[in-house]
Image: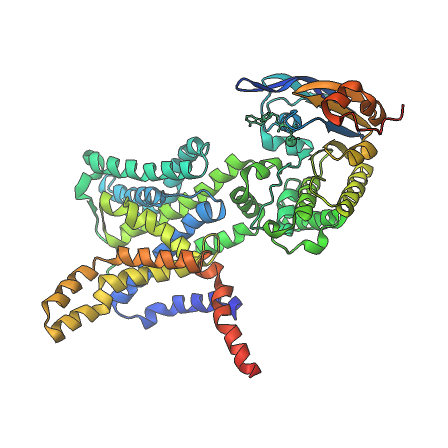
Length: 336
Length: 243
Ligand SMILES: Nc1ncnc2c1ncn2[C@@H]1O[C@H](COP(=O)(O)OP(=O)(O)OP(=O)(O)O)[C@@H](O)[C@H]1O
Ligand SMILES: [Mg+2]
């Protein structure tokens, strides 16, 4: 059964635009799939190679600005920007990794955090290039969401399948060895610097692509949105942790849960609070309705605490534990 | 030309001379024992030979080639592999995956790495544990995994750092057998060991150091009768000397 789950999910995702006919649900699914890609990008460098990164926003933002600037500055189609965004991000990842992989553990994590923040400031201050705080507005190519949906679905499939394939090869074994023990890895002939660079570049490539896709889809970006520390970088980590660090399908599960949870709060528990406010006409409920829509961070916090306490390997990593919580009880019933 | 030659190796850590002017020659096919009290600099010497540390001065030659200061990971490709005194299993990977990761140093093909890993685990007697997580192994098997992993890189020179420490008598017996089997494959071995029974029975030659300085070298017999070694390391009550 478990073996067929990814296949069933894939088929559902492919036929989804036939089921979800309204733009709202299609938009949500596009976001979920984008988070699958960002989460997978984080997972390859942090989950599989053990180099914890707060830098998802750096590559996401650079990808988005690449597409945006192609249209805004060069007058070309932003789709050209999408085509090269992955390579542009690798061009950034290269010197960055070269310098900062001399650092290990938390020190590396800190420089990735700095990278995102520095880029956010550059995008804000360099107004002549980026338009600064005002951001970049481009004309969307399609009115319908369906083309965008299939593009991001294709990228998501490519990322997940790509990582799955890589993890079965020499590269994958080397990534895991580096995560487990860099000194042991070196003694086994693994060029840790090189393979960390490789992992970071794969991560940067797919994160940049999805950033560019975000630009062409949304039609608008500004530095606060695409270089956001907590809406992009930390969210990427949460997707990874909730789904399962270092697992192939973890980011898929994590993306559904995190986007779902965010939407659950944003809509005030799917309109429950608004409805209560209207029914009871109580001022307190109306105020609560206003605040709960901004309380998704609190929801994330609680979720992460629960996951770390009860499912330290994430939902996919501790799948056996989750199933086990139900199965033994059933077995006992049979015995009786 | 010796198989491995260390020339005047010195390593300072701040004001401390962990290894001071140590020279040694190891011939192909022998088991070369390295002994000395705690803190004598044995592990540091291993770190210098395997390029984990760069010597303050002195050189290392392997098969006539100066390998001083080359990148750590390149040592393995040259045919030198070391084990760690404090074992370093890749914890959240299975024993099989640990060994496959090592075998990838000799091939890019997963199938070949798998075959190499299976063959090496069989040879080292760890095949029955192949699906266990490395982090969950008892100490005896962790030490064995260190050797197995190193052997999967197909070394010509194997550096064993206290692979029998903490083993019970049956396990050390097995360890001795394995080390001899490895030597019979044509692998040259440098071994650090505090267990005198082991080191004296398996070594062809022994080099003794104390406070980073060489104090004696020779056959087990000669070294165990050397007054400097007895004073610095073996103690007066060590009466295995046959002269
Ligand atoms: N990385 C390091 N930094 C500073 N000092 C070190 C370092 N490594 C070793 N030393 C010091 O160098 C000296 C030699 O240590 P080493 O580990 O080589 O001894 P050893 O002969 O292997 O001892 P043991 O039998 O206890 O394993 C010790 O005084 C140790 O504290
Ligand atoms: Mg030591």
